[in-house]
Image 1 (cartoon, helix red, strand yellow):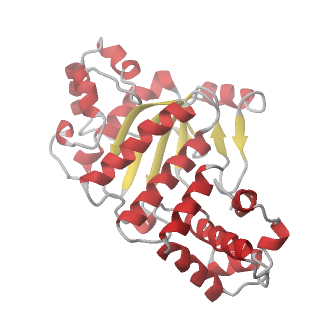
Image 2: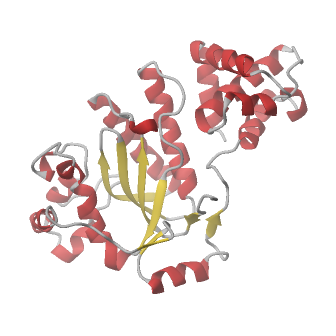
Length: 305
């Protein structure tokens, strides 16, 4: 069954959920959550988005984003990639940190935004991590209680129906503890009414885009970026027998990036590299993983894509 297309629209509101690979923890220490929030703030200025709510759970993340441009996939690719590089380096791990593609729903602002914010802020309570939602440090609820935004978090839209009163909003959150949030979700893409969905579909194909890529970053794109940096040809980098230093280095970096940012297996990467064996691909990945200079070079190349 094909994956659903990703919806990218200007001015869109999205509920985003991403989990650790095999549901593993993705935050081991307070500095991890702090680093993720740092990236969330950093890229808000770059990609022009607003965060309306967030909740960083031990093994998954909830975000409620509003995008100015039709660029949700670029936002999440850069955000999750930056955090993965940080996490793997700090905790001496390799490979994928997050499980597959992130999930996203386009949200109808008027009918669902406030209810969805309550659902996000109640996650730690429903997971039995805290008794009171305001006691959880790694959600955006504390900003709502203070009635203040910051460089990336925007509380005004959700607090507006409560007259900007954070305590009134908290009372609303508490009212949802014993209620199930069962919204109408269509095709795993939309959270809203039929009229809302029709409006989006009518506008797709104009300035907005419905992403049709099977993954958020491809081997071809990685190869293009690596070739550009090393100034080698795509044919040279995929011929396993070429021994020139720059070509060998570029191939190692390409393997490293493909293992980090695509779901490709060792065998699949080997096929793309002219029939290289899985063992050769694995050895090249480990070389970069253990070489600080090559690893930092790979990070630099990736950040420029």
